[in-house]
Amino acid sequence: MEWTQFAIFSIGVFGCFFWNRSESRSDIRHMDAKLESNRSLIQAIHDEVKSFHNRMCDIERNKR
Image 1 (cartoon, rainbow, N blue to C red):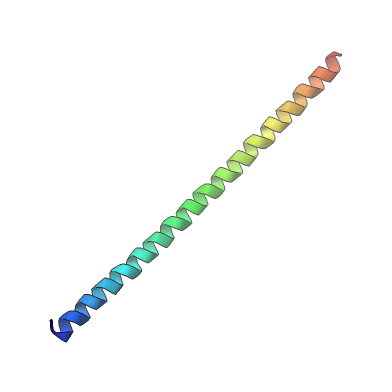
Image 2 (cartoon, rainbow, N blue to C red):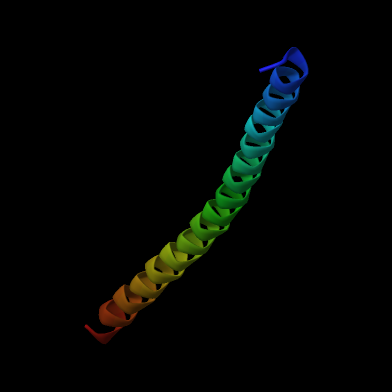
């Protein structure tokens, strides 16, 4: 293998390595954004259930 073939091979391998790494980071950022939106949705559902529970407790207290 000549040195030019080795250089081209090395550049190709390192190029693929860095491209794969950047794609991986992009995927991680996308998943983080998705998880954050899910967390806010879950928090909103939790708050609504808590509010509903408090309203039900108030109704029970008023019936007595």
